[in-house]
Image (cartoon, rainbow, N blue to C red; front, side):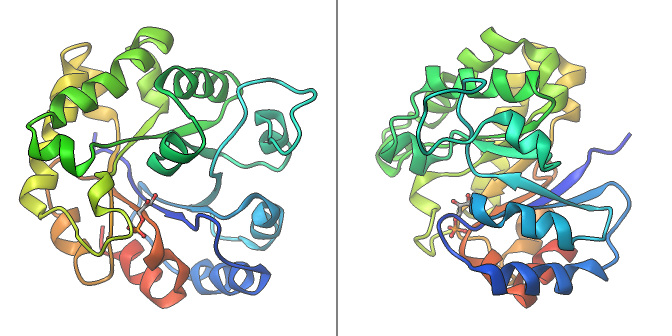
Amino acid sequence: MSRQTIVAANWKMNGNAELAAQMCRGLNDEEFNANHQVVICPPAPYLALIRANISNSQIACGAQNINENEKGAFTGEISALMLNDLQVQYVIVGHSERRAMFQDSSELVTEKIAYALASGLTPILCIGETLKERENGQTEARLSYQLAPVIAKVGIESFKNIVVAYEPVWAIGTGKTASAEIAQQTHEFIRNYLASFDADVAQQVPLLYGGSVNAKNCEELFAQADIDGGLIGGASLNVEEFKKICQAV
Ligand SMILES: O=C(CO)COP(=O)(O)O
């Protein structure tokens, strides 16, 4: 069985109602390969708008974060139940911007993943090393450090319902993409690491590359054996460019 391919848009704190409407109009009539999924992750205020305007069954919605509690006095937070309510299927967890700026530690990321899974959401678990870590030869240690607590908490079987996005911090928003060769090597490491727990599960997990992916560099990246799609930031804010990236897998 071939692995599912996924191209996910992470709008971060960008976009507006007009872009949401344009993106739905632009993508609704696209025909994608079978087993390909497009996920749009807008800021939370636009989730309902996108849900209401998507008619293509291969396009889903995702949130950019969730709180690890069911409900209660957590001003400003969004719960998994609310995402269920809006029929949002995916949620990005552990993005490096949240790890760096909002204290999303590996422990908290693990709790969010567990809660997302228990609520029937598909987490897109983001992992990645800094430039300093890569230069010091610590890439593999960093990635396993980020994966290990999640595997310990939810079990390797749960990775049948998890998407992993490898986003080297030094490639995010910098215009510096990892070369296809470096990206493939790192994805292969991630798959082998997962395979050391369960080889069958590891073969099924979609591994996405993220970091300055655009319409020009996506084809070479997506052609790599262990790259099953991408998590796209800046280039997902342009409908025509994002369409090209979705079709390149
Ligand atoms: O962080 C990213 C997606 O989550 C990547 O962002 P850019 O594509 O803008 O580099």
